[in-house]
Length: 88
Image (cartoon, rainbow, N blue to C red; front, top):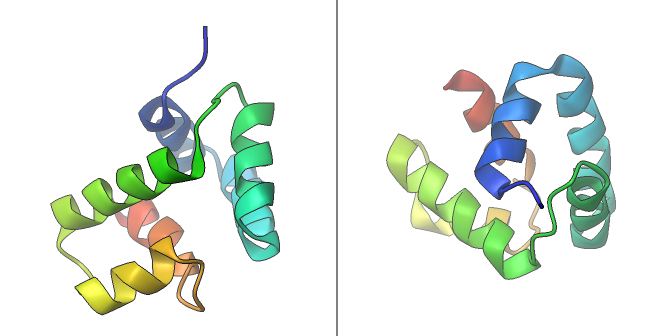
């Protein structure tokens, strides 16, 4: 049984090692992020990841829609997501 994105998120937040591994994948782009997720038991699609990120950011209310579009689209602010996750 595959982990949910939320379960993987909780693991990444709790582990500095997984956070660093995720950040390295994030720098390589969407395919690397999906490979990271799969390697850790989460078979999510890019759309599912984007929806999860969007919902978490909306919960936090920390960034604007323009910034969200950049994050979801792989823009220069993509590290905002993990930094925001680490705050929670």
